[in-house]
Image (cartoon, rainbow, N blue to C red; front, top):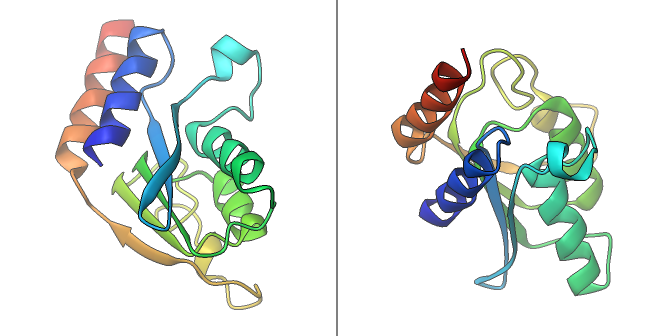
Length: 142
């Protein structure tokens, strides 16, 4: 999670919302990024989507079975849906997102009983540090 927080800090320095993510396959980080929505002029360029796309390219497969996604904020519904489509095995995230979380705060996409894929979820890892980074970023913008 510390490496994901580094990506989040780099995003903040670039004027992006400070969220960072990395994707692990067979014990190795194969992709890492922060949010790039402003830089890329792409509303889908959330950190999670960026690393999912990069990992799929590296592995040569749109299915990312056996991988783990580590992210500093609870994924939104778009990112949670992408995780299902990619068949990511495990999600580890820091802070809950009470305004838009797609895992447990607002929606429960990853655990919906009608889906054909389940994602193991671990939450709260370095949550205070991630929350502080986000709060500081938005306080400076106001």
